[in-house]
Every structure is written in C-alpha cells, then in structure tokens.
Image (tube, rainbow over all chains, first blue to last red; front, side, top):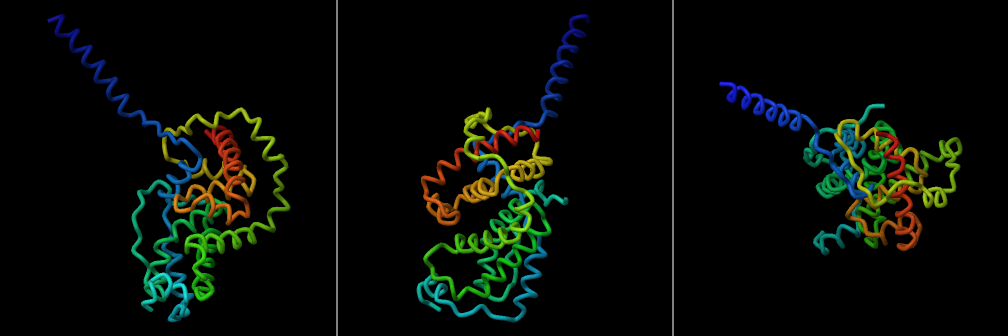
Length: 77
Length: 186
C-alpha cells in the first residue's frame, strides 16, 4: 500500500513535470536578422483597405498599354 | 501604435479585383513585400498603408514606363524606397544617427554567430520595430531588402546604390547591430 502511494507520488511528480514542460513555450531560434524579419513578414497581414482604396483610385481606369506586359507574356497581348 | 496582425497565421488574401487582371496579380504577388517594407521602414501602420496604396497607384500609372530591365519586384521596391525616403526626409534631420555605424558595430559585443532566440511571438513585432528604429536608415533598409529571398545581392546593391561586395560587408555589420539591439529589447 505504501509502495503504491510512493509510486503514485512519483507519477504525480512526473505528470506535473510534463505539464510544466507543456506550458513552457518552445524557444524559436533565428540564425540571422533576415531570417527573423522573414518570419515577421510572413506573419504580417496586408490591410484589406489598401486593395479597396486602390480599387477606388483606379476606378474604372484600365492599365496603360505597356510594353512590359508584352515582354512578360511573350508578346501575346 | 497599433501593431498589425503579426500573431495571425498568414491567410492568403484573394487578389483584389483591381483595374485589370494583370494589375490584380501584380498586387497579389507583391503587396505583402511592399507593405512590410513600408511598415518596418516607416514604423507606422497607417503611414505604411498610405504608402503602399501610393506605391501601387504610381506603379499602375507608370506601367508603360517599366522597361523590363529589372524584375517587377525590384521596380516596385525602387518606387517604394523613393516614396518612403521622401516621407522620412523631414524626420531625418531630427533623428540624426550620431554613431559612426561601421566602427560602432565592428566593436560591438554582440555575438553575430549566436542565434536570435525568442520565447514567444507575442509582441515580437514591437521588438523588431524597436530594434529597426534604433538602426541607421541604411542598415534598416539593407536588412529589410536582404530579408526578401526574391532579391539577390546584386539587386539589393542596385536598390541601395552599392556594389554586391559592399552589400555583403555592410550586411555583416547590420546583422551585428541588429543582434546587439534586439537583445536589449527582451
């Protein structure tokens, strides 16, 4: 009975340790500043308002005919 | 200052229905890169939003001037850098970076080879912004451009008016400066 209690205490202690570990946030490492910035950029959301404003600003206008689109699409335009 | 949703998982925004499918695709492919540059360079989400709008509007109006000698991303970056630098021009005189950059960071104690360690991403954006704000304009811009994997050192060099070798040299010091300052924000 006593052994059972002891085992139970050990188990409890192990369980507590596991819980503590689970609560600790894992450290994230970045080798360089650029890597960190890249991560930051990937988690940055572009405000949808920009697209809405652009829609209004360009309102109905069509993009000027451009040589670069022809180059870009291999002269199909 | 309102920090953008740096904590959110990136959810691809559907391309806006802009003036043409080509312009929509140009925006969809490059808006995050341009917005991020503006955000971290100007250090103000509202100004970054305005700047991104202005950059794409300018690009829309000048599409016919794009000669295809550079990539579209590089061309947009050039417009964005000019725009942001003009905006910052007025502030620059009031925020003169007094340290002789190179000498200061050459002797910095920071270990450039040791990784930048973060425990949580919460408030990471603020720490990054604080660090970038403490850097000279030159180092800030350099790091932001090099962080874009689509740009080569040659392209970054062309954008900042330096040779690729000069970019590599400055980058080393910029990393060191960033690491030293980032540690202080913990």
